[in-house]
Length: 421
Image 1: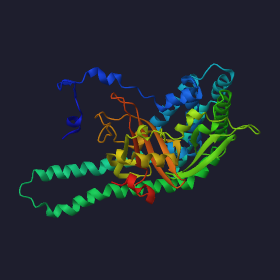
Image 2: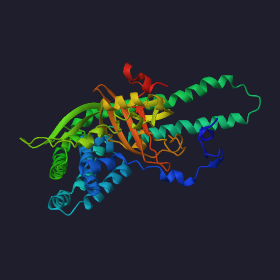
Image 3: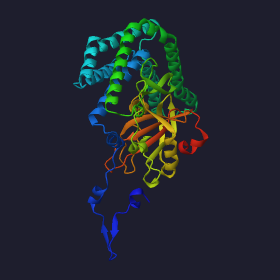
Image 4: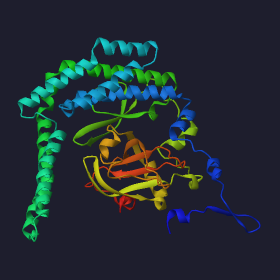
């Protein structure tokens, strides 16, 4: 029997007759507030204040990432153009307070966007001298086409040859199938070696410009910290990721190596001598992205989907099988309560490139889940995994999706029931 057949669509009245459930009954369902709404109410923050902090953190994180890992941006004109377009738009949308006006003025005076272009151009020139004239991504796409097109031609030609013995073709087809993976590993290995050998030289050659970029990042971070303190927001609740340990007035929570990069997990530090602002009692239930109310476990989050049978390398998920895991929701909630959270520095579209095209994750009602939030979770400082949060769909529910970041990661014994297929 299907899920729809299992769902009751009739009610029985006192006379024993059945009546179809009114369609408007769904509209009477109590609307659950999102985590963001509850946080706003618990902390007394306005939506514009939350947006302001998020936009400034985007500015700081992009410029910090670019300064530390410039080679990740070379030969990626469209990608960098989009980042800078977002960056300048966020700068223009800053508030009218004096401290925000100062950020705008310094952005223009120091020509931050031009500095990004100049540093990128020098890095590309240095890469060209070492034999790299395109990004690793473009190189992989080109090689893939060079292999796929001849393979399709061969298959098409053979399809029109009658009574052919295909046995002799099997080894050739195997070679064609294995060649893309071999070339991919080769390209990525050379690129990683090039980055490792030239990262310091790129930094040294652009030291003065990068120093300007980082000083601007520091000013943006200081602006956010001052705003939070002015709003009396507990600083320990605001967590974010940077790629450098060069900044002041931050408390380091953790650091992890991810995709060959070192990521630093921070909160803002309180001024010397200032006691931490207490976290409102109402907020205690939101210490993790999922509300788990111990006194009313029946209301704890249950819509967990775990991606099993995954093929994932260095944070990019290529294939997976989604499984609804309501039966172990209590165990998952316990894992989340024992984990630290940080927003992922990459977009969901880059984590699952085929999402919405070849693969999807569905809500129980059958609607495709729209992923709006990505977090990298660290369980007991030893195991890392993804947590994806969907937007609330038309049925009123949302789903939370768990996944490994790499299929070669060793899952701790305590968590194997969660991530097993």
